[in-house]
Length: 154
Image (cartoon, one colour):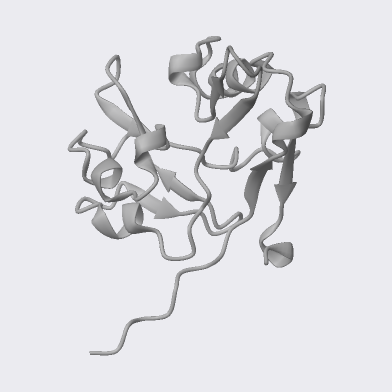
């Protein structure tokens, strides 16, 4: 059986670790935009800080060309946004089973998270529907995040 063509491509937010100061503004902005509260636990981007080296790394969805999370969702809660191409979870359709999180090969870094208050999973959706693009990129005072549109992805 022949493999079907990959779904529509999306843009991606790329971290620039050498510019990051570890302030966490990206996390707070993300949770504020999506959840209405400043909470790193509810952020779609996760910042890990090494207290010994002061280096920071970001964990967020890389919007895979062949998204295992999308294909694992049995209820259709995970969809591909037609405008942005972002792999997105419709929280009103999510049943909280976690199949998307289990299928994601990168999820050891909290790419797809569970919101216990809502009983659903969530992940980066590139701020789909937001005209200025991902809020984390716009909010970073150090320019440590960059949005790469689908047309420019390598």
